[in-house]
View 1 (cartoon, rainbow, N blue to C red):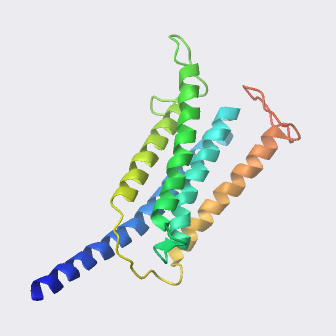
View 2 (view 1 turned 90 degrees about the horizontal axis):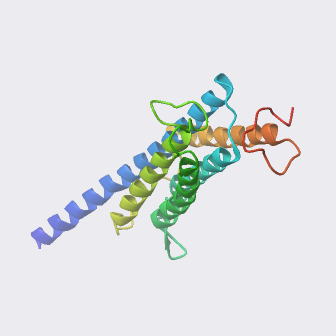
Amino acid sequence: MSDTSDLHASSTIRSILWARAELILCHVCILGICGVLIGAFVIQFAEGEMPCPLCLIQRMCMILAALGPAFVILEGRSRFSHGFSIIGAGFGMSILAAVGGMSVSARQVLLHIAPGDPGYGTPVMGMHLYTWALVVFIVVIVVSGATVLFEPRIQLPRPTRLRWFTRCTLGLFALIIAANVVAAILEAGPNLFLPDNPTEYLGL
């Protein structure tokens, strides 16, 4: 009987540690994508390099990928909702967004793969932003898939209130979303379509 109790206690401790690791991972995913998007803003406004339509789609896919961990943080107080796994739903959302973003960034890579093609924009640490975006999407798929694969099956209590760090993380993410919306509106103006190589803000 004692061995069974010890085994159950050990399993519960591992599940609690994994639940905390999941929460930390969600914050890291959101902050990591926010960092990438902030870097894109630095290139756009400090270097004067305007994003093309494919670049904007990749940014949107990154935002959608970060919505998965945000969903887990906000809804993860109960591990299951309406019969669905919160972890599975959140990181499944991230995988779908990353697959879409990966297809767009891979297309942009292939557009500039010919020898002698300088690519679009200035390289950062030897690679263009769309190539880095492809790397980011691959990492999101791998991390999200591993998280879903190793999700513990034990129902664990979650905090009823968001901690200050969580509120700051989600606040920064919301600010990044709003900034991307404003930047896209300023770039496109009243037009439904952008030129392949935009050179001015049509909304100013």
